[in-house]
Length: 328
Ligand code: NAX
Image (cartoon, rainbow, N blue to C red):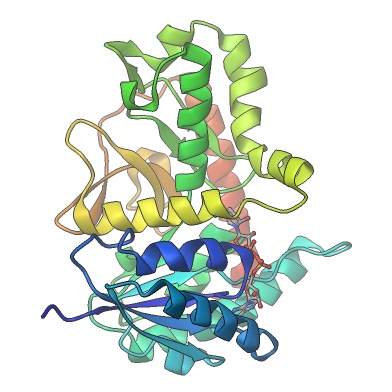
């Protein structure tokens, strides 16, 4: 029998956790032939709720699920972990300044990085979902010096999927007819969804749309502010779609992206496209042999350049702020 893959999920009792765990256990994260063991991390007050979710997981009798362990300390939760989905984070509450938010998340992602460094398996892959995702990933990475830096990533796949859906609607085409869309920069309101390199039935996304005003005043803000629109409509933040994007990200990382297409993920910059080295920024990426690679050689016009630079500037500022706080 195949050795099960250890998947650690933090914030397991939260709403994304609830949408995510059943899909992992059913085989959608890694593939229908890969058995998994779940290691759930929660804060002590939420352990009981995580136990409730574990009872439901049991009740699904998933053939691929070979065990569930629940922890309230990161040291144990990341022991032997092959895939870590860092979902639990400290949300911004009323009156909280950015510095307070970064500091509170430093208190979560620093010990988790240390625990990953100390106990995770050699092939550990980390996806940070909890916000501010890019910078939380940077903090965790800084405290895991023995883990290759490229193993720390942050999620912009939900933004990517949102952009695909908006563009498909606008053009009246199916999702399958759109390739090579890109989210650049930070998973925040400054993110830049780029359709200039997107391919739609033999032309570019931008040409197919042919409407710069729609691009600037409708498409980009709709994608960037979709999270707020979901909260407004649903009375709760995106959960199933966020879980779905996390599944997509890890599945592609492990199994590869399809030929002739790319996706978006926030990965450590190697300096490509003028993004300062080391920043965890979203790029057009393919996955080959279990590694993300930045798609090279794209022409970036002036409009795109300005948008990318603005989002990357925000990432640089977040990095400076966590440096100042001694978190990296
Ligand atoms: P919830 O508040 O429902 O759940 C968060 C869970 O994390 C809670 O159960 C809490 O007890 C747990 N937690 C807090 N600190 C922890 C710690 N130190 N260790 C382990 N668990 C801890 O939030 P949910 O809706 O599930 O969202 C989780 C995170 O995802 C938030 O930070 C949210 O901002 C972020 N999102 C990121 C998205 C992305 O595209 N990157 C989109 C969706 C989502 O907004």
